[in-house]
Length: 116
Image 1 (cartoon, rainbow, N blue to C red):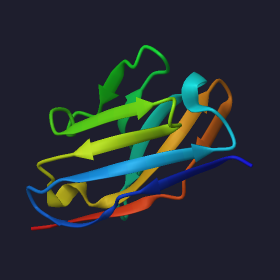
Image 2 (image 1 turned 180 degrees about the horizontal axis):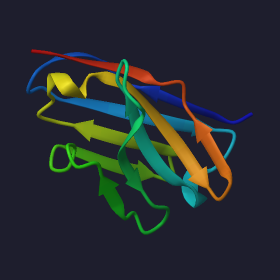
Image 3 (image 1 turned 45 degrees about the vertical axis):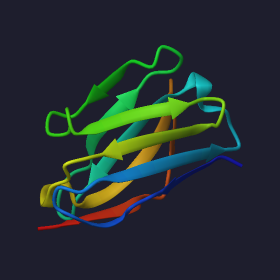
Image 4 (image 1 turned 90 degrees about the vertical axis):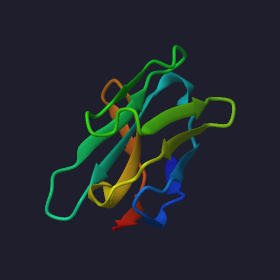
C-alpha cells in the first residue's frame, strides 16, 4: 500500500526554522518528481518546491526562494524541506507529493504555524 507521511510541522516564531520530512512507503521515490505544496485557509494550494529524480534539480515558489531548501535521499525513500526565516504568511498545511506521469501520490499534510 502506498503511503506518504509528512512530519516536522509545528508552531514556530517568526524568523525561526523548521524541517519537514516526507517518508514514502509501498513504492520507491527514485523515479518520481517530489514536491512540497502548501495550502493556507481560504487560499488555493500552491507549489512550494520541487526536486527532480536522479539529477536533483530544484525549483521554488517565488516567496520561498532563498529561505527554503528541498532535498531527497532515494536510498532512504525520504524527502525534506528545510524552512528558515519563517514568516507568519508561511502558515499553512504543507503536503508532499510524488509525481510520475499520470500518477500522483499525496500525503495527509502537516500543519506549520508561524507566530508574529
